[in-house]
Length: 279
Image (cartoon, rainbow, N blue to C red):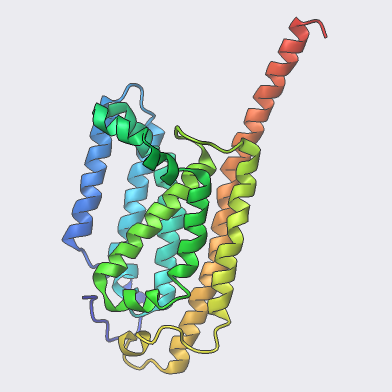
C-alpha cells in the first residue's frame, strides 16, 4: 500500500524517500546485466552504456524519491513522475540500444526470438506510435487511473508501461537499433505527430470541471478540500500539456541534427560521385 502522507507537501519534504526493495533490485539487476553484456560486446559505445545507467537513475528518482512518496496524494506529483519515466528515462533507454546489445551478446535462442515475427510486430514504428497514442489517454482519462490509485501492483505496472511505451516510441524516433526504421526526415514528423496526444490529454485534465479521480478524496493530505484537489488536477494537466510538449520538442533537436548531418554527408557523396563521372 502507498505510504500514508497526512501532512500537506512542503519543501522540507524534498529529502523524503520510499526505498522499495523490489524495484531497486530490478533496477540494479538490469544495470548489472547491461554493463556485463556491454563488456562482452565488441567495441560497445560507452555513450550507450552511460545512457542506460542514466535511464536507471531517472527511473529511481521518479519512483523512489519524494515523487514516489506523494504520487498517491497529488496528481501533479504523478504527472511529473510520468514525464520523467516516459520522456526522460525512456529516451535514454532507447539511446542505449538494449535490444542490439542483447542480440550481440545473447545466446542463439535469444537472437532467434529477437529476429522472430512477434518482435518484428512489437518494435514496428507504427505499433510503437499506436501504443503511445493509446496508452497516454487510457491511463489518464479513464477509470483505470482511479484503479491504479487503489491498487499498488497496478500502479507499479503503470510505471513499467510508461517505460515500455516510451522506449518503443523513441526507439523508432531515434532509429539506432536494427529492424524497420523511418527515413531520417520523417522521424521529425513521427515525433511531432505524437505531440497532440499529450496536449489533448493535458488540456482535458486542466479544463476538467470536477475531480475525475474519486480516490483522491480519501488519499489527499489532511486539510485538502474538493477545490484544492481539483486545482491540483488542473496543475497536473498543465504539467502534462506544457511539460510534455516541451520535452517532445526537445527530443526533436538531436533528431534534426542527425538528419542535417546525414544529408550533408549524402550531398558530399553525391557531389563526389558526379565529379568522378565528369558531370
